[in-house]
Structures are given as C-alpha cells and as structure tokens.
Image (tube, rainbow, N blue to C red; front, side):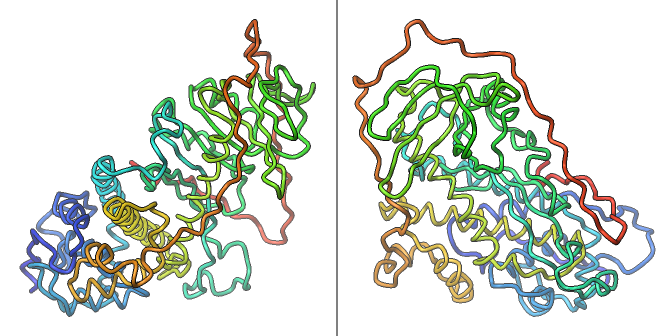
Length: 460
C-alpha cells in the first residue's frame, strides 16, 4: 500500500444520474497538483490518488457530508469505481487537502460548469426566450456573508461570541438566470466591506450586451455610467428620495409612468440618460431604473418581470447555505473553508442542472420542481444506486417533487405600443457627469485591526 497509488476509475458506480457523467469525465482528466514531482523526496510515498481524493470529497458531499470524518470513512471503507479502500487516518486526509489548495477544485468547478452549460443550452430556458432577446446573457449580481466559524482552532478560542473576526468573509457572485447556474464567483475576506468595493470585477468575462439585475446595494451613478459606456444593460430598483428630472414621457396614466430622466441633482448626477418606470401592483408603488431607453425594445411589464428574476440568486444562495449545509463549516482553516465552498458550489451546479432537466422533460416551470426535497432525497438515491431524475419524472407529482410554484404572480399594466409617445427630435443622451466620492467612515475598535488580504477569485 505504501508503494502503489490507487488506480484511476473510468466510471463511478455510485454516481448514477445522467448529468453526473460530466463530473466523472472532468475528474478523470488531469488536474493541477501542488505535490512535488521528485521521486527522492522524503516522507511516505503518495497513496491517495488526487482524482480519488476529489471524487471521494464530491461523493461525500452528495451523500450529506457533515465533517471530515465522513470523508475519511468514505475513503477507508468504500470502493469508488476501481479505487480501492485505503487505510489512512483522517488527519492524513485533511493534511492532503490543505496541501492540495484550491486550484484543482477551481479547475474542476469551471470544467464541470462549462459542460453543464453546454448541456443546458439544448433545454428550454428558465426565462422565456421572448423576454429580453436582445441580451446576450441575463445575470443577477449579489453577495452573501458567510456564517461564523466555530472556535475550534487555537487562534480563534480567545475571541468572544459574535466577534467580527469569526466571520470568514463573504461570497460575491454572478448567477446566470436563463441557465440557473453560478457563472462567476469571488471570495472576499472582509465581511464588513462595502458591496461596491471591486464592483467592476462582476464584469469578468461577461459578454458585451448582457443584462445585469441588481438591488439597491449597487445603486451608484458611476456604476450606471460605467455599464452604459461598456455596452452592458441593467435593471435596478429606484432608490427612494433620489432626485431626477423628466426629459421625455413615453406614457403616464393613473400612477403609471414610463419616462426618460436625468438622474441626480446639480451636485451629483449621472452622465448618461436613463429610463424610469413606475406602476402600482395594488399593494405598493414599484419603480425601476434601466439604461434600455426604448420601450419597444423592453416594455414596462417586461422590466418588472425581469427584475423579479433577481430573486433567483437569493434562492440560489439559500440552496447553498440551507439545503447544502454551507452554513456549517467543517473547519476554520481558510484553505479548507474555500475548498468546502467550491465543492458545495459544484454540487449546486449539478443539482440546478438536474432540476432544469426534470422541468424540461416534464414540461413544467423549473420552480415547480421542489429543490429542497430533491436535495434531501439525493443521498438516499445515491445509496440505492437509483436514477433520481427518472424517478421524479415517473412519480414526482404523487410524492410532491412536482408541485405548483409559490413565486409571486405579478399584476402588470398592459400598455399598447400605439399609446406611447416618442420624442422628436431625439433627446441628448449624455452630459458631463458629476460624482460624490465615497469616503468610508472609520470604525473605532479597542483592538488593533488586522490587515485584510486581497480578494481571491474563484475563477481562473
């Protein structure tokens, strides 16, 4: 055992659903390694093959992993394809993970995501094709703060409960609304940093002409102008009490407004003309801002429908934290925490894709497939070596996997195109911008502040 590493497997027998073949292919290809290549290096020879390690970790998470003891039991007691059980200690496996770093999992994440996206392109999209067909992609932007770690490590034990130092940071992310997939991710070490910090990193590898959906946390005049200059579309909520000047009104009637506006006051304002829409749903007044200036290209009802899909990223975060247990950290070590986040994101990509596959084959909306129940039952079907996708298609309605969606149904006004009034001549689209520089207020603390590290991209 000390001389012969475990042999690679062409097939993982416990990994049954059709889309999981993508994971097998990705794990079977070479991954970056941090292990030294010299045959004369001191220490025990390598026993656990790197592909065996990552496949065991992925399988353990799919089976409901709660600690590294579960991974150790998987490696020690189960045959994974042609990989034989190995008599290693749990400490040896954890040290191997720490030494491996996050690069192999990042490569695996993007490799699997690319193959899943290729597969999903053949299925009906979560957002109907007639909604914003001009946009190359429709993505939602947001971030979430990681839950506090437990004080098991020596350097954390002296900290009181609730101390900000127990927060490992936050995850900034971009979510593809059409494909229901995580598209870009960044781990940020400071949980208290303003969400506008490094805001332009959200555009990494994003095709021009994409439509961005974001909430008031990213409401910023420089951000609006930058997106317009870089040829991206956006929709966001109107921030209450923000000053604007009407330039042209397309439609106005009984609380409904569709107009071109200059956003801001004399002291601070945008440099590009924007569009403001407003309507009442019977409960409250809803207002949105966009840089899609032509209502024939994007109508007021479609703006409301699209912005409602910004909630998709909130539900995706909920899946990570609650349904896939990312609120519970297996370790407080930074490398192990990032590994846990990435492997859970890999599983989330697969689960979202399987949900899309079920919805397409069942002819239902993806949100009519119960994701919490799907995640809860996945370990059982893996143990039984059954195809969960096929079972849901056959018995899903009787067992509650397929049920009516609980998403809010919007009550939207119907505005015919011939009721719109267009400007003649066209208005001026740009002016000299003026911004107020953001200066964060320093926080007072009795303890000296630690220097925060640089944000690390979860993308190559």
